[in-house]
Structure formats: structure tokens, C-alpha cells
Image (cartoon, rainbow over all chains, first blue to last red; front, side, top):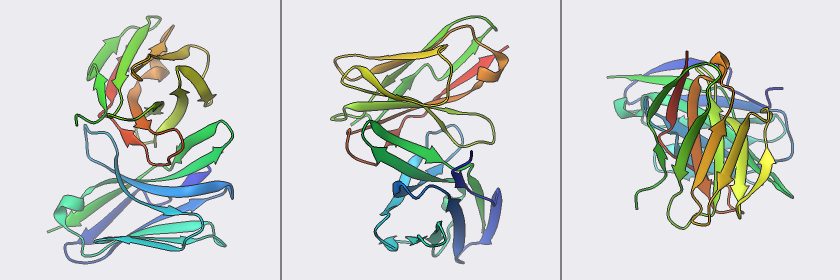
Length: 114
Length: 112
């Protein structure tokens, strides 16, 4: 049961343009959504998050949008830079009682071309 | 602040053997979670430790066990290794009620 889905395994974007990474989820009980960036041979690095009661959160070049009715979120990177090339994971937190775990999507490999 | 550290970096074991992986959380954090990341997949939750107890467990067999020590560091033990246990094992630390988890670099386990 894949509760968090990233349907695009890869994305290629020109430097300076916008990168849009998408994520869909099925569980309405998720209370936070997070984006992590992962370089090879490193652990995931936290990028940006959004509460389920918000619809937008912005941090510098990164903006996350949440559409609860569609159970969809997206990460926008503007402008894209070659150093942004990495695997991006969408994650959702399930919290309540003894539960406090992250459920990850399968990731999207972003390649920013100079 | 050293962040989350894990040891060893790489490990090669034979099927049927046992392995222990170690994790030191970020300074000030009290909760450690373990994840398994198979090739081409996202991290999968194994279990979480808080106050030296396993709080929640993912869909992993009893061959996977863990421990948390009074200094909040943690170990992941896997018994009777299978070829399918080959993966990157990630440790993440956090404060118990916060949502943001900080990951270590992982331990790459290869079972032959």
C-alpha cells in the first residue's frame, strides 16, 4: 500500500528555469509533509515542510504547495541551479498516540542542466 | 554539532549471519528512528525508539531488533541475514513531538 507516491522517476530542467516536483498521497491523517534532498552516498537532508492546515510555504528558492482536496503537493524550485541536482523525496508524517513516523515516496531524480 | 552519525559506513555479510549497526543522534534529540532504503525505493520505516523503548514498528520481521541507550544512541540488529536485506540503513533523530527528522549518512549493508 503506497500511501505516498512520486510518479515521475526523473526530471530534467535547464539552469535558471523552474523545477516542479510532484507528490500524491492517500491518507487524510497525515499532518505534516516534508521534502528531503538526497545526494549519492549521503543521507536525506531536510529541505522544506508544510503543515496540513496550510496551502503554501516558501523558503528562499523553494516553495511547497498543498492541495488537500486533490491530496497532492508540489515542490517548486526557482531558479533551478546545477547544485540542485539530486534525488528529491516527498515524505508525510503520521502522528497520533504512539505514532510518529515518516512515510516516503520513491523519489524523483532532478537533473539541472547548465 | 556533529549531527547524526552512523557506523560503519559499509558492511559486507554472508547470508545467515547477524549484523549490528550503530547510530548517535543529533545533540539534544531524544528519539531515534531506523529506515531501510532498498535500491530505487524511498526509505521504509523499521522502528522508532524513545526513552529506551520501541514505540512503533513498521512492517519488518522480528529478525530486526533494536536498542536505545541512556545517552539516546541506538543500535539496529538484524539476525539470520537474507540477500533481500541488502540495502542502505538510515538512522534519523528528532525530538519526540516534532515532525522534522534529521538523517545520518547511512550504512550500506551488502549480504552475499
